[in-house]
Length: 415
Length: 150
Image 1 (cartoon, each protein chain N blue to C red):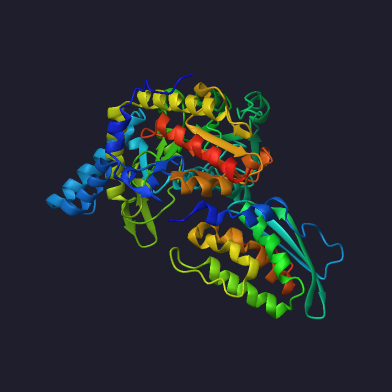
Image 2 (cartoon, each protein chain N blue to C red; image 1 turned 30 degrees about the horizontal axis):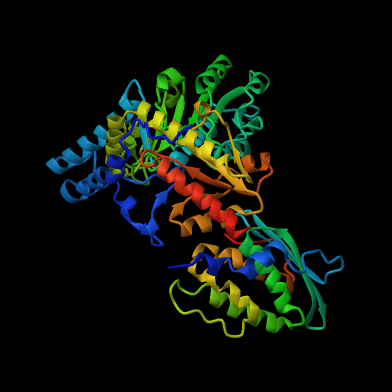
C-alpha cells in the first residue's frame, strides 16, 4: 500500500490550528504520537477557555447578574453539544465530571456501592481494561461482596466473545467493557455486549475514553446504560470528563459528591436532591473546561467523525505496513484496521521500551513506554512493557515515516 | 542539546548487553529487591560481607539498558569497598545523575560510573539509573521489603 496521501482530512490546515506542533523538541520538529495519553489542543479550544476567564467568568446556576447568565448559558450549551455529539436523547443525560476515572467511579459508587448491587451479584469485565475500569469494581467487590469475572482475549487482542455466554448469568448486574483498548487499539462490539447484558437484566457500562475522540458514537444505537469519556483526549482541556447515563440507570444511581449545586433543599441533618444531571455535579464545576470541551466537540463535528475515523484507519494501515517491513519489531493487537483504532503498541527485540522512547525523544518523537495503565493486559501477554505510538487528526504519513526512521535508529544504537 | 551518544555510550551498551556479576549468590549475607512499577524494572541485589567490606556482590533482574548497565557498573564499583565507601559513592553518583540538564557535570571520584553522566540530560531516566543503588542501600540496611520507586 502506498502512503496515506488520499486523506479525508486537510492535515496541514489542522496542524496550523495547534500552536504546540510548531515548537521544536531537542532541535527537531515535534512529532506527537501520544494522543492516547492526551491529545494536543487547537487554538480554538485554548481561546475559548481564556475567553471565559477574560470576559464572562462567574459561577453557574447561581448568579442573578448578566455575567452569571452568560457563564451558565455557555456551560449548558457545552452540555447540549456533548449530548448531540454522542447522540443522547437529552442533554440531561450528560453529567460533567473531572475525568473518565471519576465518571467510572461515580457509577461504581452510586450504582455499585450505594445502588442496587447485592452480595453475590456479578460484575463482568475484561482483561483489556484500563486500571480505571478495574479498580473501582474492586471497591464494589470489597465492600458489597460482589463477584468479579473477566472475559479473556485471543492472541490478536480480540475479546473472546463466546466467554460471555458462560460468564453472564442470572446474577450478573453489571457488564463493563472499554469500547476501544488503549494498548491494542481493539474496537469492541459494544452493541452485541450490551444486548447480552440486557438479556440477563444487567446494565452495560462503557469506558469510551479511547473511543469518543476517534469513532462516531451513538449511545442509543450502542445500547450503553453508562458511557464515560474524557475531554483531554479529544482536543479538550484536562480536568473535564463526561458520564452519559440512560435515564433509568441514572435514577438508580446515588450521588458521589454531596454539597452545593446537587441539592434542592438542605436542612440541618437532611437534604433533598436536585434533578438529574445537577444531582451528580456537586460543587462548582470545571466551567472553563466544559466550555473548552464544547468547542473541541465543535471542532471534531466540523471535521466529521466519520472522516476522522477514515483518516486514522489510513494512517494506521500505513503504519502497520511500514513497521512490518522492519525485522525484529513486534506489534500487538488486531491487524485489521476495521477492528483497530489508531493505537500501535510495539516492541523491538533486545531493546527495552524505555530505551526506545528515550531514543525517539531525541528525534523529537513522543511515544509512550510502559504498561499504559493496563497491567492485567500486560500480564496476559507476559510483557513488562511496550512502546506505543498513537495517532490523531494532526498526524499523517510523514509522522509515520519519521517514526519508522526513529525505530531504525534505535536498532542501530543497539546493534 | 542532549546527544543520544552521551546517554547510550559504548560502555553502557556493553554493560547492558553483557552485564557483569549477573547471577544470584546462594548464601548472600544481605539481599533486597528493587522495583520500578512505572516501567516494570525489577532488580535483586545480593551482597556477601566480610566484616564491613563488600566481599562479593551480584544482581539479577530485568530492565532497560540504563538500569541494567547501572546495576552492572555498580557491582564492579563497590566490590571490595566498605559500606561507608559504597554509600559515599552512591551520594556522588546521585549528585551526578540528578544535576540540572545543561549544567556542568561533576564526575570526580566516580571512575567508570562517569559514563552514566548523560542521564542528567534525561531527568525521567534518573530512576532507571538509581534503582540498583537504592536496592543496594536497602540490602546493606538489611531491609527485606521491596524497594519501590514511585
